[in-house]
Every structure is written in structure tokens, then in C-alpha cells.
Length: 347
Image 1 (cartoon, one colour):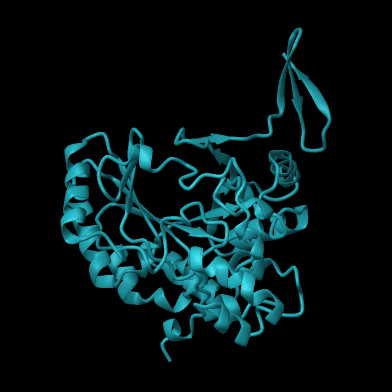
Image 2 (cartoon, rainbow, N blue to C red; image 1 turned 120 degrees about the horizontal axis):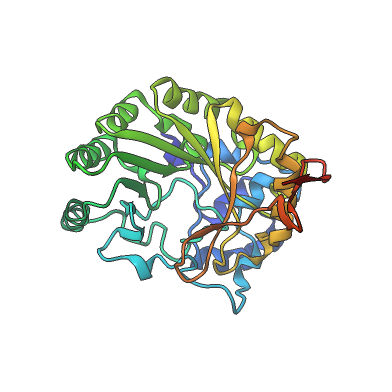
């Protein structure tokens, strides 16, 4: 059976699957009327229905708290629109651009920073003319070294369409790297087919796939196999995670997540502080929590398991590392803190 047919796309379907109680339905219908809902079977199967705080459900099952919007929350929290010279293009940094091919995802995260822009009621993909204009922009800007395919999820496109885009980018001489941001290996592992992998490799450029994963349990059997298919094909995998309250905001959960990534040949890349997307305050931590988790990782787990903890500054000002720092100036040099918290003089 086609896995897409089984995807849960309504509160009624979530309730029939035991993921929503009758008492919750009325409020959650209001959430679903505002924000997209889709929970594919690979992720639904991971949810413990007996655990009201299940970290997988917390990411994907709507919550009435999403109806509460704080004054500091923004429809475009990282300022994509401010840096969009063409439809589908975000050019925030000098040497790289985002190319947003689609507004559709296999699963809709309840904390998504583009939640006002994605979903089945939005345009499914760039029109042929808009894609041509976006590619022309990349051709005309010789300082662009890397193109990052995002959306939505670019791997929701058919291998045929993806192959065509990869070949177009490959023909642009100054573009040397193509990166794709996706949840597909964990959301719909069956989509990682030999045909899709051939499409990714149709580019003669260096290709990286950044896999979004927030909890170790997401990397179950089918997801592990999907990641292995990509890695065995010679495609390097990077890990992107979002720091989420009740999901990965404890030392044990974060260690398990980073180790699970490395065990699956996914190099942890970014740990994102939660963005100020509307209705997501119940999932955000404070920065001190993130810094504490990074201190715990340092020296206690392999260096391969260390992501960069970053914040996208609201308003479109880009990412900045949040530390923590281990260096302080002293009268005759520096004091360096080790992973146990002890300080050592360095002249």
C-alpha cells in the first residue's frame, strides 16, 4: 500500500488512531484549521499512546497551546522575506542561497519556523517560470558557491523533477556544492529509493543531505536503512536538530540523539535554538538550557557528536553561535575551562 495514503491528515484520523482524545478534538480542530497537519505511518508507529509526554507525539501531534501566540512571535521569524530577491530564493549570506522548491512536507512539525508558509493549501511547488527565474538569479550571481534546496521538503518531489533541478544547478560553473534539507529519511523512509539517489547524484557537484532529526527514537529500523542507502551511495549526511522542551532538553536525551546520529553516519551539524514562530512557546527552552546541554556534551561524548548551537536572530540577521564559551581573559593571559568545570591558566 502507498504510504502516503496512510498519512494522518486530520484531527478525526488522529483520534481514530488513538493519538487525540475526544475532549481535545474541538480545540485541536481550531489548530488544524490554522496550521497544516500530516503524520506519516513511519512516525506514527513510534508514538507511545500510553505516554502523555511522548517526545515523538510532542513534535507532530497538534496541541491546543498552538493557539496561544505571544507578542514577540513572528510569522516570518528568521526574516526570509527580507532576503528574497526572487520567488523561491533566500540570499542572506554572500556565498550561498536557499532555493525553496516546494511548500509541502511529508510531516508537519508543530514548531516549524515556516508554519505560516507551508502546507497543502499553499502552492505545491515553484511554477516552471518561477523556477527558471530563480535559477537565472543563481547564474547571474557568481559569488554563489552553494545552493541549499529546502522548502517544504525537496525530497517530496519526484526523482524526475529533482534530477532536472540538480542537472540545472550542475550546469552553473560557480556553484560547487548542493545541500538538501530534509526529514524524508525519518518521515517516509521508503521514498529514499535508488531512483531518488540517482537523481541526487545527477549533479556533478558535491552533494550533502542534512537530515532533520530531534530524538533518537526517530532513527528506527526503516530510517536507519534509508540513511544507510544514502551514505552507501557516497552522499555525506549532516544532522540538524531543534532544541525542544520535552523532546531533547535533558542531557540523556541529547546524548542519545547525537550518538544515534553518528551511529547512522550522520554528522551533527546544527542544534537550533527554537525560533519565535507563532504558537510555539510551549516547545521553546531558554538559551541557558541549551548552553548547559552543550557543556554536558563536551568531553563526555565523542567529538563527532558535537553540533554547533545556534540562534537565527529574529528579523533576518542570520545565525549566531550561542556558545558556551570556555575562555576568559586574566591579568596575565587567559583562563581556560575544561569539560569538568575546572579553570586553568594559559599565558
